[in-house]
Image (cartoon, rainbow, N blue to C red; front, side):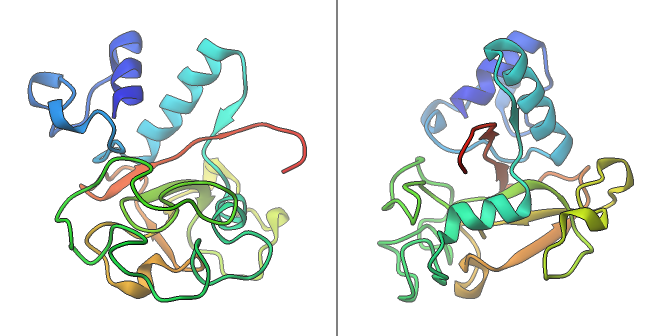
Length: 188
């Protein structure tokens, strides 16, 4: 939330609807931003790229899954054991988002790859696996549904599996939808 608030202030961008008077919720600075649509997430990435000089973007669906699953085929970011309220924020146990990093890191050292909030990707939604980046699924001009990954704080067990996918309208934002950014790097 805090990083998104900096963007809202610096860029003059419209804050999420639930931010009272357009201000960052006091007790949520370290929580993920929610109620943002895909276009908001892309605007944040473009702004961040401009102010840092590095190339930030939403991860592709394949990048997101590799980051969550690792290379050993695990079912969840932490392994193959079923989720519990000690491993991720799901099933409404907490009743809202939790601070980023509250739960153990996953395969690649990343936090909150399961539960807490659904995360927008740069991949549009109607395509099935196996993944083929050349089939048009990364063509942003043709998108009418974008893929979200990770499940959220109010979702059941099966939604927080690394392989679970959800596609929705890129113009919508929900209380359990957010995003993470990927930075261009060599080697991943």
